[in-house]
Each structure stands twice: as structure tokens, then as C-alpha cells.
Length: 279
Image (cartoon, rainbow, N blue to C red; front, side, top):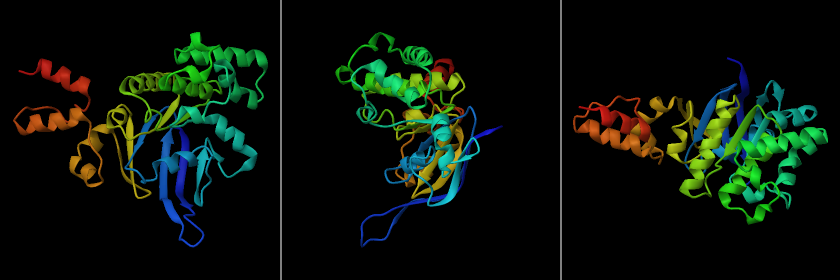
């Protein structure tokens, strides 16, 4: 399949202080992200996953190696707008992404900066707001909305730029369980529409919904595989202080009691369905 993003031997260092040695946040990472895929990137705090995310659309530039978005080198200033239009990004805190006092103006901000014609902007704004079920709020002030609603507006602002890929950097971290479920539903719908999804998360129940999971530890890729392959290695995950989804943990306990649950049962829905049919 065609690659949306290609990462080649990427390294990135932060300067900790004037008299201190730089901290290597990304250490020789190589990774291909296929067009139309849904990849979750997980890891404990300080593993480098958010730094990796910011390197994927040129917010941070490689200290070594390279990142290519649809073939464009993120270090090439001539194509930085092509990169950022292709790979949009949604951050953890929606308040840091909202720039206007009216919802529809906020969603229009990105397309306006891309030089899109006014009539096309209006169409994009309406469509993007409907895609996140926020059409009726377009005349509202963002600061009066809930955290989950603000995050929907932030997503709509990215969708309005018509990216082929969206990078979500822990978009549900500041939301309650209901808000998290709503945002994940929108992410799944965007993926079904053909958008390439890269989800940075520390919620295992979110990661299990992806087609592929990449686990980072100390700036390197520790594991890379399907959710079934990754969560079958419970001991390795616990060694790097990562939990497994509740359904995976429960299924493991039932297997040890003699219940023959298939290894590909890794979601709550799948476990319930299996147990309802189990005899």
C-alpha cells in the first residue's frame, strides 16, 4: 500500500538547560504509516510519543534522520504548508486550539490561512461542524461549551482543512468517560471516511480500536503489531508500566480457570459476545 508518512532513523533532542546535556526524546525511530490506516501510539510518560507526533507534521523538525509526508520532507520550507494541510493535528487541550470568539469563525480559521475561497470556506465549515455533530452550535461562543464540545470544535477546525491524515495527540486526556467515548466515535467515523488516523493515547481501551499499535519506550519503538499481537504479551507490557485493556485482563483470568477464550477477543464487546455464546 501507499505510505502516507515515512519516518527514517528519526532522532530529536531537547535542550534541558544551559549547563546540562541534551535529552534525546526520539532515538533512531523508523516507521511507515500506510494511507488509510489507523495507528495507535502508546507508551508511558516520557516515552517520546508526543514528541514523535509533533515531528509528523513539521511542528518539530528532525535533529537527525527525516520525516516524509506524502513524499515531502518536513524540513523543506517550500512544502511546509503542503505537509500541514495533508497532516492535520489535534492536541490534548482544546482551549489551546481555539482562536475565535464564535464557533464557525474558529473552524474557518484554518481554511482562511490556506487561501480557500470564501464560499468554499462556508461549505467546509458547515460540513465539518455537522461531521462532529456541532452544527447547531456554530453561532455560540467556544468558551461556553463543555470540554468535549470544545474538542469537537478543534477536530472540526482540522477537518475543514481537508487533511488526508489527522494526528491526535492524546485528544481525550482531559475529558470525562462520556466525552472520551464521543471523541473516539468521531475518530472512528473519520477513519471510515478514508482519513489516515494516528492516535497518541495512554488509554488502552482506545488503542485497542486501532488496526495497529506502536509502543514507545525511552524514545524507541519497543513493539509494533496488531492489537491482538500486542496485548497477547501482557508481561512485556507490564514491564514498561503499561496496563492492558480490562477485557484482555478478564479474558486472561478466565482462560486460567479453563474457559477457552480465543486470543483475538480483546474488546469488551467481543468478550461479552463470546461469553453469551459460551457453553
